Amino acid sequence: MSFHEDRRIALDLHDKPSAPVWGLLSLQHLFAMFGATVLVPLITGLPPAVALVTSGAGTLLYIVITKGGIPAYLGSSFAFIAPILAASAMGGVEGALVGCMAAGLVYVVISLLIRAFGVNWLMRLLPPVVVGPVIMVIGLGLASVAVDMAMKGGVGADFTYNGTYLVTALATLLVAIVCATFLKNFLSMVPVLIGIVAGYLISIPLGLVEFSRVVEAPVFQVPQFIVPFVTYTPELNNAIIVAFLAAAIVPVAEHIGDQMVLSKVAGRNFLRHPGLGRSLLGDGLATLLAGVLGGPPNTTYGENIGVVAVTRVFSVFVIGGAACLAIVFGFIGKVSAFISTIPVPVMGGISIMLFGIIAASGLRMMVDNKVDLGIKRNLVITSVILTIGVGGALVQLGPNIEVAGMALAAIIGILLNLVLPGRPAHEESERMFEALGD
Image (cartoon, rainbow, N blue to C red):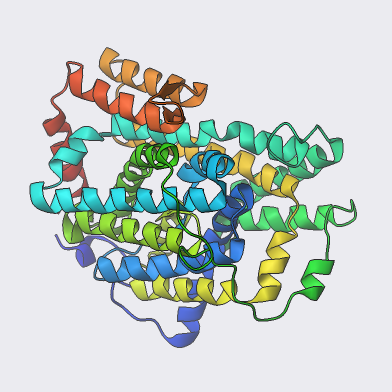
């Protein structure tokens, strides 16, 4: 049975809506991704305006690479928050961006390997029993960052407990939870944005908001792009490169998970058509572009997949419209200045929920793919990934080179999946493909 016959759709992949409807549908996607996309640069110290531009430009590039075959929006990746913070401490923001570009190249190499050898080898390396716990580690590993932002207004020893910050963060969190739980339709898809707005309003009488920078900012302004050989000369720091190469395994696993979810939502098998190799190539080139321009790495966004699922609008023209709006917003100086006035505790309160949702989505992937933890093999793999990833274990490869946290957990999870006896990996990958359909 064809896609059109067995599923209700509002707009198909290549349907173009009328202008007014097009704008509203695209704006909805912009709202869905906005809070999370600007949260990553706010945490890592990168320019939020640049993140908006690279998010939009990366999405447009992704649409071109996938030949308009996947209705996915790309936003800032949470998987790279910890590596960017660590790399910035070692080599500054510029060093972190070199690592981001290296991570983008990992996607490109994997996509080329898929084109040469097919996709089953990658699915054998990254089945749900590995991908699910790794996604959980992304959220749980960042839990301390969210709590420090909420209680102290920042991450690190330089910040101390502040009761006003904690009250603001908890109020923000409460509003976001209520919105996510009780609101319906469109409003239920933007609880992060509503929570940030509420937290911002609460912060004003508490004296946590500084408006002067908004008043002084121009209406139109070129974002603070950090471009290699223009604003800085790249330096190849081996420790940073190795850390990002290892960390790139995590968002690759996350990418596979998103493609599986989107395939189920749309009733198509995007892992086969246009293919996981092409989608990874688009994601990798978008991440490479972001690193070149000074933005955080990109990844396909679950928030926007949720919008697609609810609205049944699969049009890539709508996704492209949202990307164009993001680019325009990045060049409006008042918007960039306003974003920078959002108090850190507000973002901390939102992060508590958002990072938890990331962890829960990993658990949901395991449930959806019927990963049985009653089987000792699955229990061992899951337990080891979670403990190593959340516990902060590391392997020292040299004086300044280490593989730690999420990256180490992903690598060990892959190795355990390969060596432990149990269900043949090729059967599991085929079962996933069959579940998605043709």
